[in-house]
Length: 250
Image (tube, rainbow, N blue to C red; front, side, top):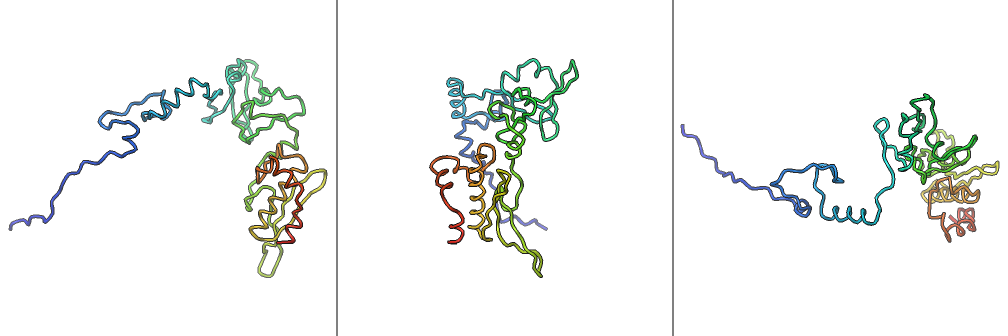
């Protein structure tokens, strides 16, 4: 029996080079070059990236910090601290709360890296501004008290806002949500404002919590739900406004 010929034909099509690779100036025929001077490893830098690197060299806008790997994690340090003989010859390890602890190889004594950088006295604590313990640059460190250090943290909350929780009440069907409550403690007293269980009520409770923080003067350490109220004239507008009247009108 004769084999039937197929009713279709096969045509080879050369794949087109994408416009992104053409714009990047990469020749597809040449093999890729791997250079440690490139910002993006394994790929050639575009002309725009090369020009940006030259501008950074001329203007001196390159980062003035060093990175030291500790337990496969990046620890950011200032250049003078990075080359400090006491830090350079010490063994670093990550302790509780991801705080960096150094061990002197000669004396076998341990000391805190942040306390050494800020020269903290007895009874003083060192706080990280961005709440990242591995960022130990001087611009990110500051001396704080125990209360100020506890304020600079973001607790996980189902409402999505800091200092706001959902109040519930018992019913025959179980516990049902009743209202939102924004609170902040200062002056030995707990200040709070309860708002309706609505979207606007949730934002109003978050705004009330920010107002309590600003009234206490803790906005430098305690993160705000709406950071715009740190600046003028929004700060004075929030302090002068009566949120209880706004709650009644709603």
